[in-house]
View 1 (cartoon, helix red, strand yellow):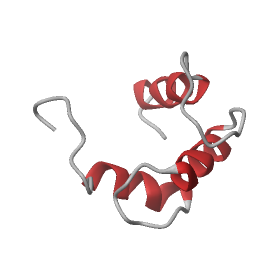
View 2 (cartoon, rainbow, N blue to C red):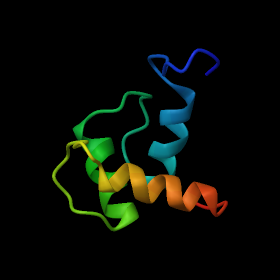
View 3 (cartoon, rainbow, N blue to C red):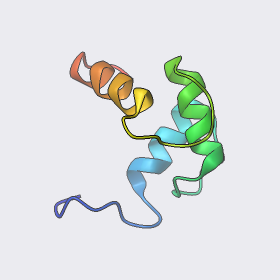
Length: 67
């Protein structure tokens, strides 16, 4: 990801899907978001809200070298 955009399908999203137990298709849909929220221990609604507790928690963990 050089231009800041996520390709479709995305190899990054596929790796996240493997970790959180979602269907591995490379697309960031409601199932993947729900599984990410559960994995990260944030409120589960299947949506990325603004501001997003899920994104903040994911960034915090990545900064610590874990997801």
